[in-house]
Image (cartoon, helix red, strand yellow):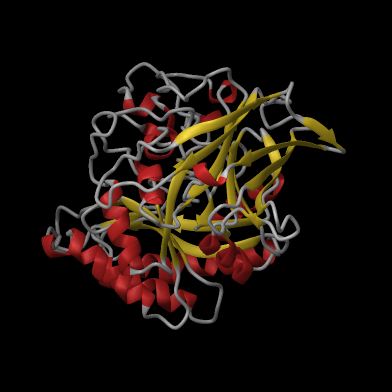
Length: 439
């Protein structure tokens, strides 16, 4: 979440060779403690403070943002509040950098940002803004005694069309993961800025969900995730364990003319973890995660088990070893919305898709094997208390490399491009992370 320390910068005409001064609140009007309080109001148990920067932003984070994080932790003590940054990626755009909560986090962030933030230097240093520099940054982070987590944000915001990548392509994320698999663990599925609305004087990007001006989001999710057989499926088919999330952003709230929701007001990343920083980070690294918008569901239990060993299922993020010749049974249990969301609606799920994918080309950005193998509507699911439950058996001859689940309140069989000015509350989705199959 951005705060007043995602500063804009002002040069002093009288001292043109001096670094520009940060304008506190220039890029976001919200304080860290305000974000933390709103996160709890909208049901979050954890949040990351992630400011991005400019010249010498590492000093601003160290001297000003860090004390505010400490104060917010005391003021909102029932929230796990991580310290981090929306890292200015060398050779790219942004990534969420999440630091483990420890005695070194303040100095760790300053060290990472000062060494590798692409906008940190003054005068600007082109050598800091290369993709090889990002690989070096990830190597540095991986060697830290208590390594952080890095999640690529708004992956396709600079794309110019469907599959026409901009600053980031699936192959680049593969390189990140190869360089530091314990650090570079995934990418944003649903970006922030979902409350962007068309207004006079705004270009198409600033009136589009996610501020995606080149090619729009699809059901509020980035095209790498929302396109069946697209970038995410390609990475999964190559054998990557690559986790997706949903974020909020906090530059300006929609009620004040901004493009953002409060933390958790619209998008949530659910992690199966105890409410501790260490276990939440472990859950992210392990892929025990599902992402949802509009509180369409608030619980998901997705498992796969060998028919001969039904009592030992694999869950989201796990790997299920399946001997040749054996079938598996997939069970999907979810708890639908029971109370009104922040928009005052009780959203109703229309259908749930079970998606399977096999191996994909080692260097491609498509996976032609990914497909919906079963679509469940209300006629197929059964009630178990507050939950709805469905099952599906997969034969040994059809065994995939991975399985994942999505669902929506719309009747769309595939998420389509989001039109400018769309009401995001009418277009809600959830996505699980995969169960991986080893055979």
